[in-house]
Image (cartoon, rainbow, N blue to C red; front, side, top):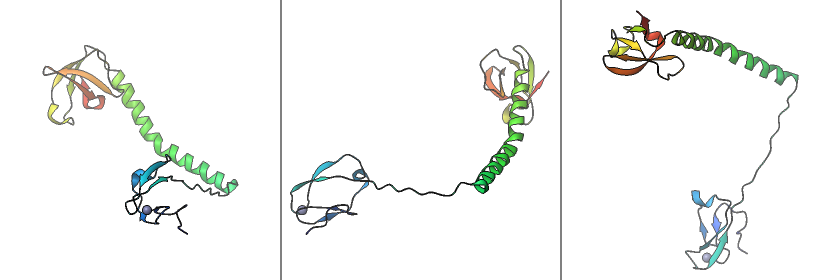
Length: 144
Ligand SMILES: [Zn+2]
């Protein structure tokens, strides 16, 4: 008797020759192949085995989850506030306004330019400076 059902390897049902499966063999579509040993044709099908696990979910676990959600919200709050401030500051730049790029913004530092009436990312401002159109984070700009 050849063990060829629910085996770890792909086993030829005729001669018992075993082939190690490769990535393509882990498919739900059955296919036909030829044994490299006895050269007879056979069908290969792969079955996945599912299992379920459970864990208690009572008052203790619910309290732990609630505490976790609170901690996450507390950790996110300063970043959200900063984003809101950056967005509001960026929105305060109106088209045509003259601005200067602050020292903190790398090679563009010191450039002066004009705020453009162009679509922008939430915390950024579109500026034409030195003949180049660019997006700058609002916090790197100073109103003139
Ligand atoms: Zn075979």
